[in-house]
Length: 421
Image (cartoon, rainbow, N blue to C red; front, side, top):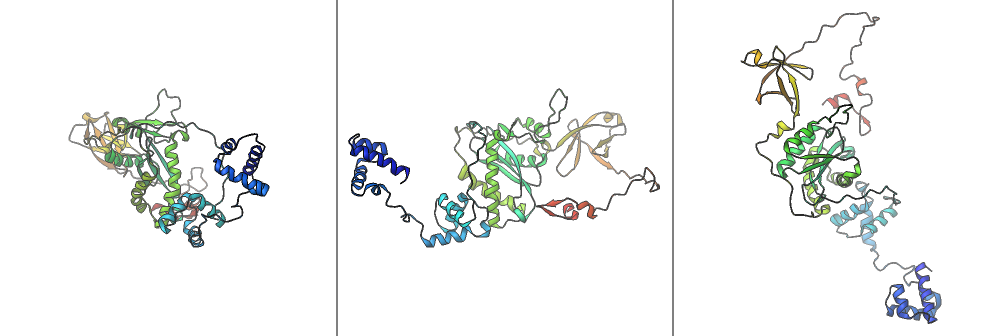
């Protein structure tokens, strides 16, 4: 007998001995008086066996029929469905086969098929939940997730994700080669044009968002991203732990599971196709997982059309003009072409901007200067003996096998020429 049936026996015997009423016994067992009287009658007729469930050892009345089980078995054992979890598998069963089963039923079938392993519940550290912001656009969590999004069909890439704190809605996302200032800048420009300016961004302490090497400086250096947001009046908050920005972290976990498998089913093999599909995926994601905000007020502000976002999200630096009207930047020399006399620009400070293509521009008092790059010729190499202390070995050719040492994509070595392309 189970513990539940033993508890019934105790109450039945107390009712037979008139120590409690049938109503009290039924209330204690959580059943109706009518059901308790049936149990009492079976106990008097059959003894302890009358308390044992009649369903024991028999198949459930709601058992899935054999034909349906065969269809489910065929889908869950398909190699293309490898790695699908029970929840996502149940959704695919309904969309592809028209079979509606609970995720726990699917989980049991997957365990029996050997494609899913029962996992014990992890004991994790408890982090108090932070209340959501009330309005959309009040706080937007941003993060980049480096992952093998195309599995073996392509190299790794980074998915930049902007998640609204009030609704868990994905506001913007894009696949980029790496997580850097220019990649965040391109996504911000598109996001600001489509939805407007949020009140604040919430990020980690990645070097794009925060300078973590201030040393003994009395002030904290400002990054290029902080400079751009300060002009737009968008506050940047850097979290002290991953758990603090848990909404975007959980979104990344969901995307690394569902998005990867959806792109596998569609046969997407490059990131251009992935970015095109991402728009449709985000619409479905927000429909499934986004929640209603606590307030109908939207904190997004309209973008000022007079602002040049391309200029704003380029790298800004300052240099001084030499007496010869030259500017030294990034190991190159640029000559200023002008009709003004030399004293007009000499020793003056100019703003240098560098765009994602590497193009350099110089600005003086808000005006764009005309620059010409001065070609730097290499010095003639001196002939020295191979035994000399000053002898330096020549660098290997660009396609020398030595250059490919240790360079791999998805665990497989690649040629340097492929990386250069």
